[in-house]
Length: 156
Image: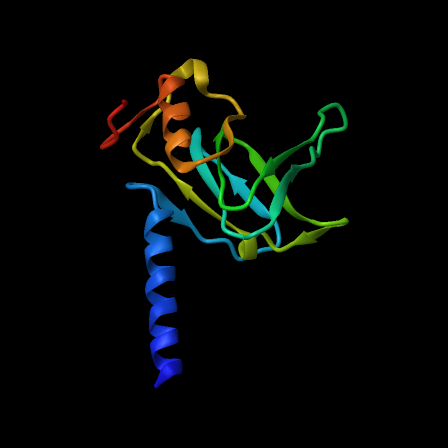
């Protein structure tokens, strides 16, 4: 009986945490791979959440010899927003634990969703980080500060 109460309590806590990490209107993107690969037909606003207890590095390596790749740190339970223009784009996940780093399947450590109701001004249609390694509240503030409007979200 004690175990049943323990598991029920844990389940309720996890459900409450999951609800706290959802952004209204953001459509989840299923990750079935080690890497995150996007092929876009139009500009998209993607929100990336580190669901793990460890710091993660999101690493993009360019396939063009003249273009540099980049890495972006995402702390435990933190958010980043990526504006992505129409092209193929790949991210790898590297988990940073005390003393070492190793590649991990992105599907095990991050969740990704798309804000389909975002109105993106033409001047903002490029590939860049809108917000990096921030809380959920700060994430939405940084997005709207870039003159990107999201249906159903009021600016403060």
